[in-house]
Image (cartoon, rainbow, N blue to C red; front, top):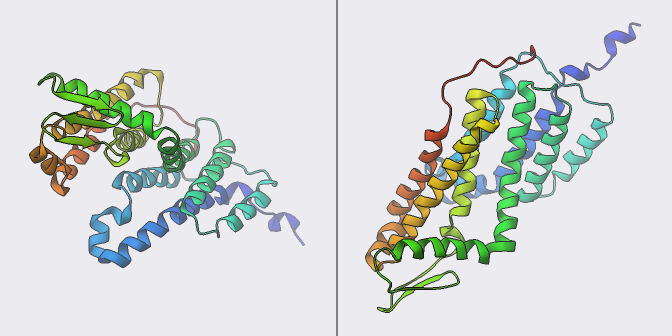
Length: 281
């Protein structure tokens, strides 16, 4: 019997990529199912199935990078298989946050087993960022929500101060002597939108350039500044009077502001593709 013919072609089995994307889909499933059950397929599709369209687009970019190579450029160590089996078992626990963490772990293992500067390594790195964004955002908002909201409120008061000095700040509350006040909660903070904007920029940047270099520091700073400026302007206007609050806090106003926030990264992506050499895939 030819034992060589029966040997497992480990370099050609995309186990780690499959497991990483399976964990990501498992993370998206609960909110997706709830959205479809409550709104129907058409309305759920229009709402991103309960998730930001940035998340879906970033996953599609990671998948495109993965499928864009003709042959796997990683060689899993045999000890990886028991780890993958354990991850698969833990994945049965119905927790979206746990699934994101398992996705990050799988993607890290995938990243470590990729050839240096391979396209698979880029895809794995992007998937790590995608997976960690959700739990890290929740953790930071839970631990430092007071400080984050206080910064949002302080920035808004600085803009309102250009109008008049009738605005007072107390923590995350902006008040006026006429009785109108604005309570800034986590949903109004720039923090969540900023994480999505940076993820969108990273996904598009890697899709076009296959790398992020030190030259992109100013571009990243531009994304951060623009997103914070848009959110600060919105909060400032909402703090003026009830009319502005109703206008910008309603569905249409929120949609316009969110759209502007997610359009901002497009201006800071290097769309012109550089010819960067990579190992043959």
